Image 1: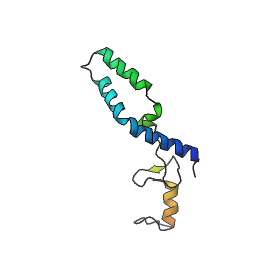
Image 2: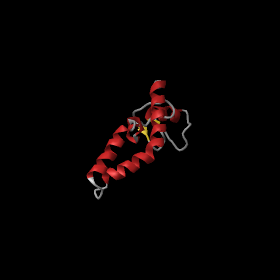
Image 3: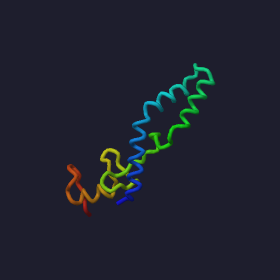
Image 4: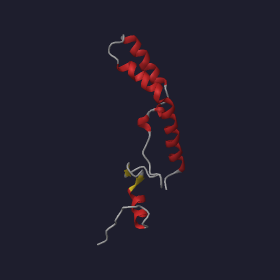
Length: 101
């Protein structure tokens, strides 16, 4: 099981990212628009820099929903390989056949 603080930090980042997504997209569109004057684009860059870093979507870490493990994460199942193996051994994952030699 992962540390509770790490899981909570990730959840806070997730909430911040959803809250600031629209404003970030608007500012990034201004920054990337080459037809606008350079001063306006620079002001948008400064506004973007003032926003909280944890509000960026890139800061969110994919974590296993069962254990909170940050590595070896399967996106389709939203769990780590360790949790998948344990649940597979118990027969809890439909359609998963675990072979044994």
